[in-house]
Image (tube, rainbow, N blue to C red; front, side, top):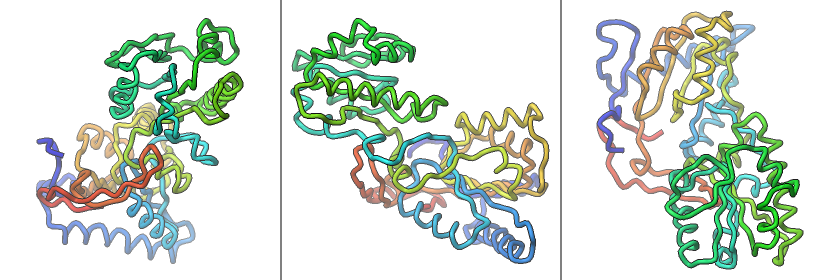
Length: 353
């Protein structure tokens, strides 16, 4: 929010001398509306209309998600995408939420916590405070299946290999006896596991572990698995709709890509850029493309690589506000609706999404 690198002015970059000059919103909107106006007419008169991809970031509010969805339904040449793939099973909310075992006094009755592929100190500071508070009261064993890290409290690190998790579920691990004899154990992981190629298999393993723990537990059968979301509206995205990740065909078969609150430094976009640099895919239906970014920060190196790699002739940047500089609604990792109120006046030209 207070970073000196924050971009608070809009610009158009088309490799002319005056291209990086700060422009008024009237000029920025005119450029954007002209592109969309001609795109709309092309769609009505052309047999194969081109597409404009809207790539959304997980910090986008529910209001913006709904507005963009309405626009995409009204104008079919808009396609909604997200920057990274996430294989979330959205059938049940308990598959991607922190459940009640960490939100009520039951944590006081627990004596064991299993952390799987998570560093709560940096990924969920409030969760880490809860675990530390429970640890300081005594009789609380924390077991970590991940890389070695300082969690500010003592913990037993098994390993970072999924084979150990498999042996734990099969009952072939030394820790199994301790888990069986524990009282009200808690299992905690995060949404990063959904980015793995084997995410569905890994989730099935965790569900199986949850069932086995319930068999030997003295408490009622419950879902002990907790999934921590790392973004302001990650749960809102899961509740909203299944938005597909951006792919190489989206770059090659579209006349423009519109990034809203989406970081260009994600592994998926870097992978697509590397494939292009290796000439993995070369066919382009459209040569004159427009790159639109709507964010408060930009990676200039990646922008330049995107421009050269995917034939973006024009780059239009729209400066937006950061969190607490605009009002919005989000769904947090517990599944609760949070209404954020504007408390800070945005700098420069920054507007809300």
